[in-house]
Image 1 (cartoon, rainbow, N blue to C red):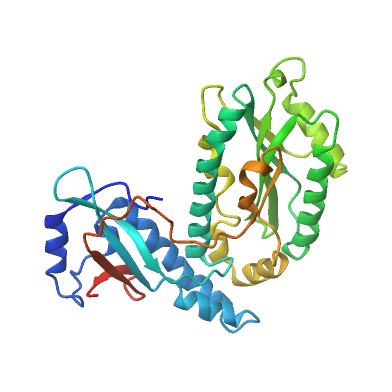
Image 2 (image 1 turned 135 degrees about the vertical axis):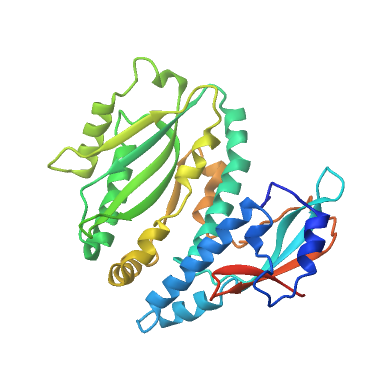
Length: 324
């Protein structure tokens, strides 16, 4: 899996290496490519999450996140153009704490890679089927009641799939939780739904009908907000993968309020973020399992033209180039 798509010339690398490793002018990882910037953002937020966990019942999480991805080893991989290289992550130590921003990001990348690999085969086997992007919500709840609300939503979704009118023959379902302005939790379901081509005919469900079916399944005494969008017939379903398999909780919500975040950790402990159902299980059931690899395997990356090493500099909030 490619971490970086844009290349850097060998002259730029040699110029960078000539600088003193402790100098303020020493280049950072983000100086080599725009694609590198997420590392600084996620690692900086990881420091804040580690601080949230410090002096709490989750002290061990704080220590693990503090040590996570402190050192990154990138391989220089030659591009098609002469003397132009791109960076591929070769080695790093990850803490795997669920709400470590770095690990949450890397986990999402691995899930997306699995989906990108599997879904084209589904399209090949079911060429006439179509795809919907469905969002199902309920009212916000106190964060202390989040686990109860999510358990109910998951049971409600199962009831929805068993209704006669439910059109899905396969689905990828993910749970997202955001923090409302009132401090309450806003849990909602995102679903990539596979339907037969006949759905866009006499079996078509209007937005209002979807809302009624979800209200019925969740046994709600109010009309919930739902959103259903058809993926264009000429589009591959992978276009919606980034929305389905992103973070479970936004990083901005992870760091906004310490007490809310600590309660969120308690409420979501051992809960499942992603589930696969219907015919898609035979293609992509591994999405339900924690990725063993957070680096990204790439068998095509056999050429080794050298390595660059970057260390997280907490004071500067950047990964800086260092000697090996």
